Length: 165
Length: 212
Image 1 (spheres, chains in turn blue, cyan):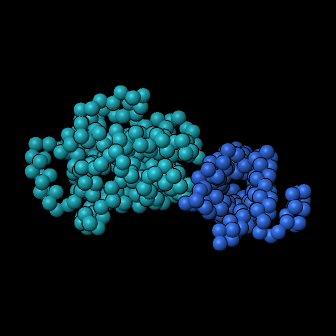
Image 2 (cartoon, chains in turn orange, cyan):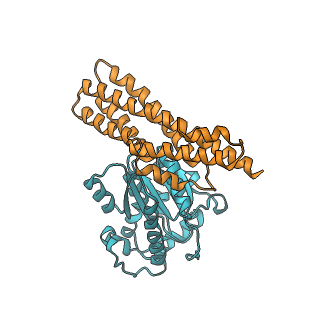
Image 3 (cartoon, helix red, strand yellow):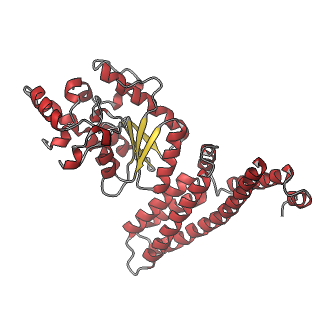
């Protein structure tokens, strides 16, 4: 737990301090994601594109990414499980996932996809099975943090609208 | 006719990925463009008023379908019609120069039956930008040689949006002065064929008539 949280508990629920604490938590989370390679500069682009006229933009993109990714991972799991793997089909899906992860700034996922495509090109089934697991690992790690991020954002935005009343 | 200076230009964005569509839409809106985003090349052709064959839907009254598009930005890799295919379909009016002489009469006759959805500007002159997540030089060259104004590597950045307006403005000034020669560094991306057509000929969207 962050030391900041103790201040949150002690302060008045609607005091500016708690809102600031939430914001600090969010910043620290996002920063750690950059440092750990979960996110790259592209995510900063998304943050820049969010403003008063589109306050839910980042959340929307994250949600679309997650929906897309999970749909693709489900398909990939089926395909790589076949006795005879259709590497072209697999590659097409991985290409899609690489594209979406690149668009959202999901660096580790993107890199794992690049590795995965290598194995597809080599028609290496074991390599693909392994690579799929690596992609899933990175994706679920990221999704976990995205969930926290979005929850924090929601709380901050709810705060802002209360403050305005 | 169009007020170029303060006009809000309209960009047609084409991408089969919902996420990328949202992204490009946001990038364009943030850069003060009006946006129509579609998920396929065929849908894009519909918006542009170009149907793949001559159908009754291509003869639409101006009030109903007057969407002027100033630039098309399309993903390269799409199922069915690729961005390159779409580019070629838009630029197909380059076939026009081969038909001549009694052209003006024919043009007037056909013009009375069909409406040019683009007003006085030719569809062929709409700048097309292609986006791709893959940096393949041969692909890039193919697109540029095919008439694309620019090739953006995905993910597209806010700074890339600045490169769009000059292409739109160039096209508009060319409409008024067809002899205007381009001297910028992007001139290698233009084809010499572009300058051969006179404004009168370009007013007609021939692809609607399936003469080709």
